Length: 466
Image (cartoon, rainbow, N blue to C red; front, side, top):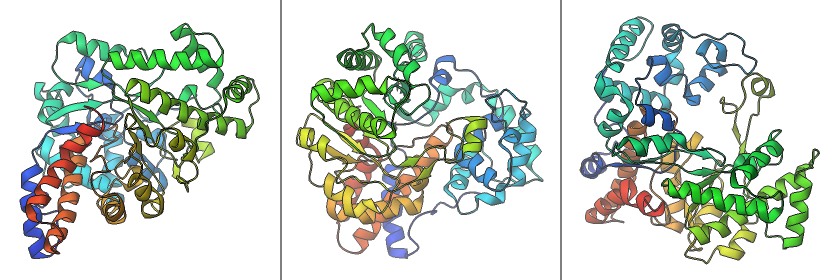
């Protein structure tokens, strides 16, 4: 059945009419996608997506974590094992498994994203089920072979103005270089993600640091290590980067005297590292990254509060990012203070904070962002990238931080076709919230129209210096 035109808008007739007007004014705005995880090789190679399962199921951990929770094995979804053991490779069989279990997604944002993509991208207005699975698979597969379904054509069709990928500090960014050399006008920029050379608790940390230092031609000293970051950040900036990203277990920061920092660096390079030293080193490096951002202008993002790879059996079999990351409590008031003492009042720094701990919205994040010039609040992230999550975010942060200490929306996705769906959801959710403020006589409608445009487009473009 086709998507309802008033989905996610308020049920009250007065507010709904206002929300319709607001939404119509922003629905076709270009998409600014300043943080995400799409593969830059898609845009560089411009090759067809192989099949519907590869497009919709395999890259989307929102989908396979739900299926796994109901007993579906990741091998059956084509997720590769670390040991090279056989996994399902037939796209049609994976698609059938998805269709057989599609009822699991009732009420979830994943269903809204998927059905938006089916209708708006492929012209499918039927709900996926076991009976129509083959027919829909064949229709989508046939369309995927057409020129207007290639990644660059979809980029243009989705009205994307700029999209940022997320790339390891040691990445050569070869795909970005190929995009630029091709002459295509799409704007795909990298983002500097140094976690692998910052997190000393990782098994591959020392090897990654050796490779990192070698790339920069820097010695294995603390100053050499910092110089390597400066060098690699400059390399990313030359290829269009405007931001860095830091996915730490917590928001802890530190600003150690140089001698203590040098000694800590020497300790974390040893084969045995204490949990405290690893945590302290991550904390020190967040402040060092802020210091570098003051110098080079890269916008800094912190994505803390995920207990990564909570399922050890799954991690051992399949590795990172397989849907087993779980939100944890996060302290921002105390943990960020060393960094904020050093740079919180410096207008040259833009530090965008995300959270997986919604209890911090009103108690910590909104008051912090409502005070420190350097701070901005990122949109609801990951588990809270949903209509209800977006609503809670606005309700709990607006009264203290307002709208203009937030940065609009970013989709943070690996699933390419979900990008316009996610932005559409965010625009509808924000228009619904603004409409109720107008109906409640707390905003004039002309103010709400300006805000709707800012939240959908301008704030992200401004905050990420795009």
